[in-house]
Length: 54
Length: 244
Image 1 (cartoon, each protein chain N blue to C red):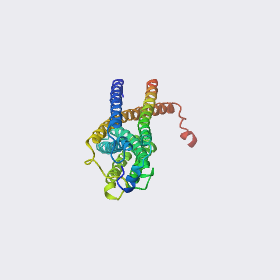
Image 2 (tube, helix red, strand yellow; image 1 turned 90 degrees about the vertical axis):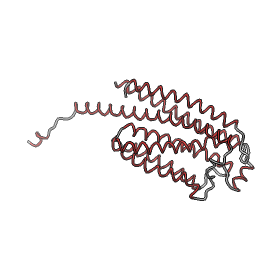
Image 3 (cartoon, each protein chain N blue to C red; image 1 turned 180 degrees about the vertical axis):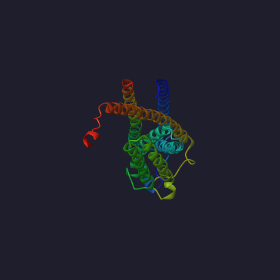
């Protein structure tokens, strides 16, 4: 959040703020789901290898 | 890891996934419907992903430091895997805090990045914990790895305090804490997001920890198998014949 003259001046002229909001949410939540998926795939693969070894 | 504990762990992670999904859905709905900030308008809604990311990163590195101390006191491998898993997830959330902060900075400050104390100290935090993860990868022996990373996990936590206090210690473009001055409706939305992100953190850490322990078990089994096979085909000791 802006806390000075520069910030307030910028905030007053923000064009299309939703594009920034959507970009931020997509990156944060998208990477969260991607990381969960990656961990899920890797964990299943390693567990399968463990099962095959035993 | 026995079959029972593995299945119990998987069930627990699945329950956390469901809770995290519900939390994220609620957080997005609340964040999109709460009134916009008077000064910044709708772009302020980025606060509901930026602040929880930073909060969870601090929590993650705090857990790493605690688990590191616990490992040094007990030498239990479970503390080492908790420390490693939490640091991994902490690095991820530091990355999302930096990314969302840059996206918020461009429309409000006019730049994606500036050499501000809060931004630079956070970037340094990110690099320090990447170093922690690199140190773990570079140390093959489990005991050495646990000891070295435990010491680093404790020392690196000091940087969390530097990041937190950076807005008080230096003159920065980044705002100071608005915990007490924030509007109640915005605060409620922020807490919903913080709750959702915390559940996601717990789920990711549990899954990462399970992966670390499974990989360690696989490595142990393969090392044992290689040693047995290696012993079986080892060349005979020709020392005496050569000396004769």
